[in-house]
Amino acid sequence: MKATRVAYGETLASLAASDLDIVVLDADLSQSTMTAMFKKTCASRFVNTGIAEQNMMAVAGGLAASGLTVFASTFAVFATGRAYDQIRQNIAHNRANVKIVASHSGLTVGEDGASHQALEDIALMRALPNMSVICPADAVETASVIEAIARDDKPYYVRLGRPPVPIIFGDDYVYTPGKSNVLREGTDVAVFATGHMVFRALRAHEMLKQEGISSEIVNVHTIKPLDEEAVVASARKCGAVVTVEEHSIIGGLGSAICETLCEKQPTRVVRLGVRDVFGESGTPDGLLEAHGLSAAHIAAQCKKVVSEKRQ
Amino acid sequence: MTTEAKSGHPGGSLSAVEILVCLYFDLMQVRPDNPRWPARSRFVLSKGHAAPVLYAALHEKGFFGEDVLMSLRKKGSVLQGHPDMTRTPGVDASTGSLGQGLSFACGLALGARLAPEAYRVWALVGDGESQEGQIWEAAMFASHYRLHNLTVFHDMNGLQIDGACEEVMNPYPLEDKWRAFGWNVLCIDGHDFEQIFEAADIAMAHDKAPSVIVARTVKGKGVSFMENQAGWHGKAATPAQLEEALAELDRGGDRA
Image (cartoon, rainbow over all chains, first blue to last red; front, side, top):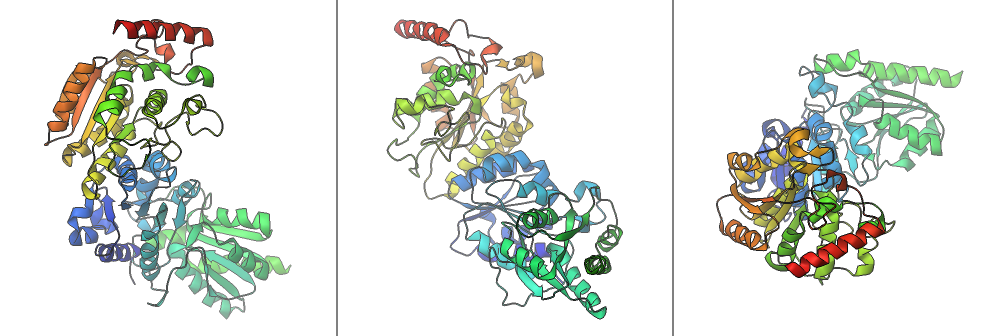
């Protein structure tokens, strides 16, 4: 078990010694986003902007225009909603070399409640031209993603979480831009999951197997640009789709999959996510349970959509 | 060019003419034949709606010809309604959404410390624009990181779209605010070349804090029917009005 944000901090710290001209910005949350690990190894390249996210994103744009590779971090809710126009004007529009890496996304923020739970951030970032959106499934994938995007000069939004999550990938795993991973092959239902929901989807796969249902589990680490080929292939093969995300069902992974499928491979889709409500306080697992996002919920929805398909 | 475009912002452009002339024809190091020269001085027009004055300065400096100038705001033009660093030679920042350019300038100024080439950064901020809270986030940032390679002209023309700044939402006194944020503050008549140069020299010599030059200006300066009229914020002159305005400006030029 390891939090994706911890892998981010470790990877940033290791990049400090690389040939890359990296600057890291944070808005007074470096102990939580883990950018403090970079500060420890390279204090001269760490800039705390204080509690001023709007300024941070525009400063990031200016630093990138000076030829630097910029990482800017805070909680997802402040990184996106609070500074949306600043990201739009200074980063996305200019196709700036800025990586917005946000921690504490989704319901699994837990006890802090609605004000701190970003459930719309994927939708916001996905709508911006030039912006890529990545949501890694575990710590190993996070490290590989950070190393890859540090060497690409385009803007990225990377969505990370607070609690530790199981390690899915082996140490030799390498993130391949543009290519989703089919983690389990199946024929009855295709499950597209992202971030913290991927290991839960893998558990659902085992539950479904007990009941004789064959589910294909796809890790959609990159929500934009979406690996449309993989989405269409799995949907065509299975004939039924379930999407799973710790995000609103409006504008996130489920929407992205539906947009692709309705144009290229019309398929029955069930979107699992937060159903157009704000978050609330609770334990991470308790909240996922309450919002229908546990492994058992995923399995039950898959079973339902498969039985509907067979009727 | 705004008349040709039939839209644009002449008032706030005219208040900053002398400042832009001093910047582009003396204070800044730029190379029209190499707009992305790494060691160039940077200019951020935070009040992006004054794009026409920036485009006029870049044209006069030789970044592009008159045909380009007359394509302002037209489909396919490199001269967008608001400054666009991805399209226009010589433009260092994309602005237009008010309150953000100063933060971008802070990023450039901090970048100058970390980049191989050191350079100076200039920014022009409007007084109405400083109603945006982000201006003061940036003011705090620049002071905290002692960005003395950054100098801001605060164009105090007193007017915004809905009327006088002090009636819409009083941003004054500006000088005291900058001082409280730890800046080196200078106050001048923004239409007086000597005062602009004198203040800029003091700002460039100051190595402990960023400097701000609060410039008292007249919106629509030099055109009698535009001067101090909020209505000329975002409206282009008709061809007849343009002729009258240019004639007046020519006479003003003779007097000077």
